[in-house]
Every structure is written in structure tokens, then in C-alpha cells.
Image (cartoon, rainbow, N blue to C red; front, side, top):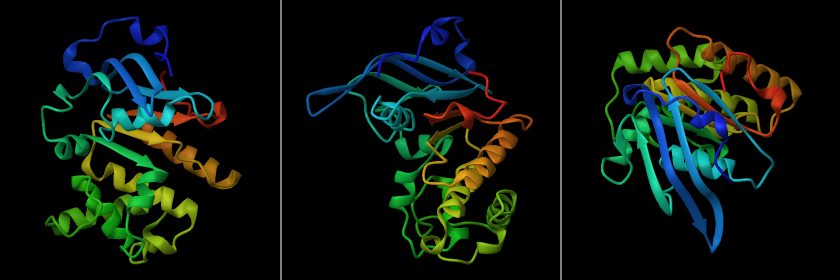
Length: 229
């Protein structure tokens, strides 16, 4: 995948406005170049759609931006903090990822409410952190917002694909991230489920003071109207 295009080089943002900065990023795996020469800045409040066919490197770009992959060359900065020079676990609280791969890493027996509340620390389970009653109320409020309040006590592994995706969206917002990365959030959903999810994403994007959002997709029709790039 080559650089996202001329739009990312147009106007130089003030450094204080930049939530994500990729500079000269290459990613090579098994002698195959997946990303080459990526220079990209995402500012506060921007909402990006990253388009491309399967195999073009979109998911790899998302995983580098969310700090789950280290680039082979180049630098990645989130909120001015450089990957490799700071605590990645803390940075992930501010650059939250929603993806099918994340769903696979969560234990199926976890209660849905625990899946959401553990997003406060970008953790995969709730056992290593303490959560207050306020945290629990916030988790339930987010579940209500995404239409999943009725399954708060259910095991995550018993949910439908659409319910799991909506629970992951709620989890992502638990830490009030500065950057929200969505890797094909509608994958595996039927038409009704996709339309419902896109409407929910559009509502978040239209909020006052929303996080910066990067959504990876290969369907133009899934881009919510409030997206800016």
C-alpha cells in the first residue's frame, strides 16, 4: 500500500492538533512489502475513510496506527508520544481499535459488561484493574447507546455477529479515546446489520467533540455522511 494520497500532504497541521502521525512508514513481512513510504497526519476531529480492495494493506495500516504492529521503518506518534519510546499499553487507551481480530482475542465467557468496562484500560480482560461504580454505569450507558443494554450480563461468545460488533464499539468509547480506529466494522453483517451499524457510527461522528476516527472499508456506501476525508 502506497501513501494515502495528496490530501494528506496538503496543509501542514499544527503539531498540537495532530493525534496520529506516520512518517516514512514501511512494513515488510516475509520479504513482502505491505506498506511503503506512508506519510500521514490525522488531526483532532477529523474522520477518515481508508478505502481499497482486499490485500491492499488497509488492515496492516490500521494495526500500525493502533500500535499493535511495529513498522519495519519509519516512526509512529500518537498524541506526540512515539511508538517504541513510551508505554504502548497506555497509548492504546488513547488510540482504540475495533476489529474482528480484537473480538477473537476476547474470552467468549466474559460478561458483555466486562468486555466493555475493560476497554477503559484497553485490556483484554477485567481482572488486572479495579473499576468503580461510575465506570460500570458508563459501560452500561454505552451498551444502551449501541442497543445492547439487554445483553449486559450475557457471555460475549453467545452474541450474534451484529451484537458483538456493537459491543466492541461501546468498548472502544469507554476510555474517551482521542483516536478511534475501525477495521472493517461491518464485516460479516447482513444488510440490515450494516445499515444499523453505519447509522450508529454516523451518530458518534456527528457528536460535539467526537474522537478523530479512521475507518477501514472497501465499500464506499458504508462511509457515514459526517466523515471529512
